[in-house]
Length: 548
Image (cartoon, rainbow, N blue to C red; front, top):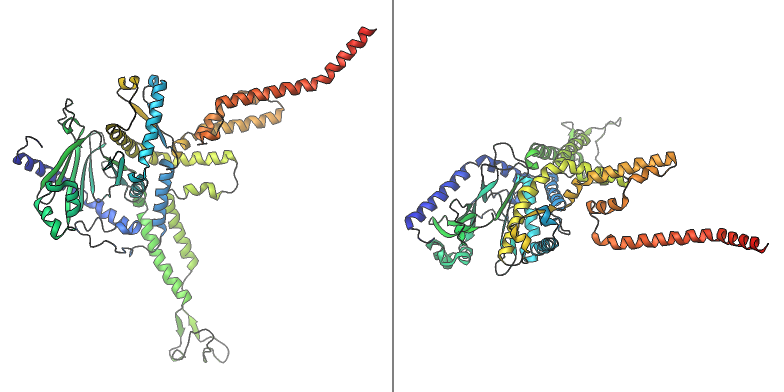
């Protein structure tokens, strides 16, 4: 940092470290809770909240707390549900548009937003961006721990985007007075070789010395991103940016990189948030008692099953136990009395089916919390009419909208802002039209994911219910008058859009108009053909009359 003395740099390092130690000390209860969850839902991550500064746990099984796989399967399905409902990779799940209604009607602005949306999806889903896999990790983190973090930055070595899901054990965040996360502290390890690749000779002496002797030795670093409280709007470097960024080496307590961002590179989201808490609470926290109960039930059932398959034998103390054999086909003399009464009995193992029923109850609770049972509605209720399907989809949207809608506000919205900031700075986006420049590029995000469509399904369901009622009335009255209230020409395109029907499967307005004209011509021809015999008879009668 130019014009900064060593004393000022040391003071800044102390300030950042002090803040980090403060936020770290405030979440001991959280990390204990997250460890319990990881042990039962994501065993591969169960050591990450414990053994910081050591990689001795890499590759260990960590499955000693898991006896039933329902929680891990439910979490994976939950992540798949969020991905398919909010960020389906096979469709354009959002569009950009002008926030000003007048600008939204401008054709050049419309074309610009369409092209910007296309480029955004192109770079987001490019193979080198790695968005799909990292996004899945964020959804799993939200399901398990209640919070997730995505770091979005420039693609190194070219134009584009690069994504990295940040594990919750690394990231610490702070809210502003409005409850928005605006400060992030990431505590993460790099080997000496990795650190030197990133910062070169800026690394502390201990890191540089390890390059030759121990290149795989780990060192810890701190990335601090916080609002720029001394922003200078006349500057075009980091001093004129909204956020300041510092990379600090814990070894040597040295700031090795500083700069800024126009948008926060960390997109943080919470599943649910209790009043007064910064970190979120996820479905795994809600069902942790059920998971513990299920595992204990599974242990008991395994013991019961083992005893049922390989039973414990009860014999008289001077019976035939010394010569008794459990081999198939073996004959054990003395196993019955002369009257045929069995002298060897099996120890009762209890009612195994009751244990299974109790486990099914706990599994149902877990699947409910992770939305799994909710998404089985359409497959478990047999044959349904189109209206019934839409009704169930509407009910499903009502149940999931509050929790999933938050992901659009806290996670996807800030991430899209960051993506546009990067692509604009890289010169990837097309030049803005004049009317959009005057509005300073203000835009809005229009979500078109399955969740967004489901939230709009109420209007479709209402239309279909009303149409069914009108058809019943028309059948009773034998009159088409009840159907005159419906504008099918306007309704069908909007229903297709809400239901997610691909645009290329639908006819354009010009094609619809051409088909209507063709139908009208066919009807006129049919009417003329039907009227021809009568007209011929009239002509013949007129001719006869004239002949008289």
